[in-house]
Length: 371
Image (cartoon, rainbow, N blue to C red):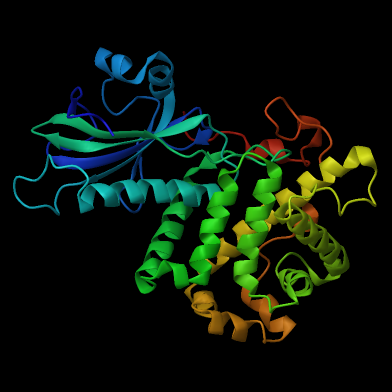
């Protein structure tokens, strides 16, 4: 928190009297129109910080953090002009201020579920504008979403930001139905996914992704491995590749169990050459990440599917349906066999350009005016 009131310079985006929350993202790859306004009112500001960073910011933050904040190239801005008693505009930490921070942070979290965001850090700022003069009352560096080694580069486009808004809206609506979040299995799975995406080490990431998948399949006691494989296989790819998919799922699950019991995560990969086991382990991790992100996205965006994950009883009933019906419900959301093993990496851990699929470079071409 900012000690006291931190006055900042007048600002071109915010209204004359409002509360605000800004997520400032450092060095992220985007391709969106300048000053894009999303369907929920979130403004996407490029390159220019939404208000002037005066010299006292450097004194307060220190040179390194100040330079990081000043170098941010994308800003997600949420504002509110009502919702507090008269005279309470300058009060921080109220329901409106917390909601704005939750909304902008939640949008970014949902965006991460859609693709691998590469960035150096992000900062949350919140405060108010009174008579055109903005004041910052809250500043914090956010928990970073990391990448899984061997991932492909990704370019954030307008369609991704709009999809993230839809995902967050759907998730928020579900949260309203389950006030006791600890008893909501799907919600716990989403938390495991978020925690997994924040981990630095691939073994910790895999552990979180498999837990999040277990939230969806509700395995019976003593049958976890078998049902993890058989149930996840129904939405992990086409029936024609099911044998291969089951092998991949079994390896991923056994790796997770070894991680849980603090064994070497490669212990179940002895059939592979010693030199290739780390590559296979990272491959399985990327596959589980893609699978659980695709499944959660499908559930959140389709209300007809959400009913099957409302409760443990609903989930148990869902997995009693025929395999054909379950496949129809999920649709073709993911094919983990299309994610290939990577053996060459660049300096920041992504797949080297020589490992990219044919045509992948076209996904990175910018079309809109971008940061």
